[in-house]
Amino acid sequence: MNSVVKIKNLSHKYGSTVALDDISLEVERGELFGIIGPDGAGKSTLYRILATLLNPDKGEVYVAGLNALTDYKKIRTKIGYMPERFSLYQDLTVNENLNFYASLFGVSIKENYDLIAPVFGQLERFPNRRAGALSGGMKQKLALSCALIHRPEVLLLDEPTTGVDAVSRSEFWDMLSQLRKSGITILVSTSYMDEATQCERIAMINKGKILDTNTPVNLVDNLNENLYCAAANNMFGLLNRLRRTSGVRNCYTFGATLHVVADTSFDPDQVSAQLTADGLKNVKIYRTKGDIEDLFIKLTRDE
Ligand SMILES: Nc1ncnc2c1ncn2[C@@H]1O[C@H](COP(=O)(O)OP(=O)(O)OP(=O)(O)O)[C@@H](O)[C@H]1O
Ligand SMILES: [Mg+2]
Image (cartoon, rainbow, N blue to C red; front, top):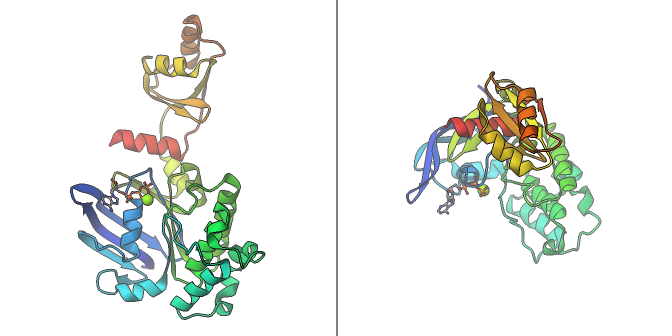
């Protein structure tokens, strides 16, 4: 087996708050693996444990083949960790931050520059700007460069795209697929469900539990729900009425529309006609295919 990260029956509590509840997970060498879950799911707790900054209450954790409890010092040389919140020195310049991280790990920037070049390239224009004065997207690129400068085996990215604009988010994912080609194993967490499809495999996590682990395509294929998309002039009225319609198991907002999980007895034409008779205008209900967000809603509902 070629697991770079192996977690067995891991649990962690803060006082009486359960942050991780008996989770098990294996990530293969070279994978781009997603940890997908909403606020408070336990993502950052998992990262702190993988980064050996926090000892778990229970369970076994191996990173780069090493035991997180006994070999934590060695693990720290093999990982690049980008915490959830901006971790760089705001008063140091771009170059000073990078130099600092390189010196921490005893490497020269030159020897690993090929690895960071696709990320750091855009920062080369302002080497002397203070990190605190960079835009959100640029800060994130600098933090990623610093996390990579010692050529880690495993890259741990905790919500790297939170609070970053849509263009920078998409650039960031492009950079991650570039980085994968260099053989680095990447664990990236996000609460944006749409980012899940960029990963080779994902673990969906909620309230400290892993709900499912698979490729995004297989996860959605297994969704197996009778799903409809619905819209009308008055979306709030539509939501309220659909939730009271027989044959509707669940109805929730989905972007600018609603998604309706229905029994096979649900007849969209008949329901449209009824809603129109009730006074709603421009009612449209049609079959749709679910995605990761629908799956997440299903899994949390099944719980
Ligand atoms: N230092 C702490 N002390 C007490 N409770 C904590 C601490 N850190 C996290 N928690 C609690 O543990 C649970 C998991 O939190 P965690 O930060 O791991 O989740 P998360 O998925 O990273 O969430 P977010 O999306 O908000 O970053 C939450 O209920 C949180 O309130
Ligand atoms: Mg977090």
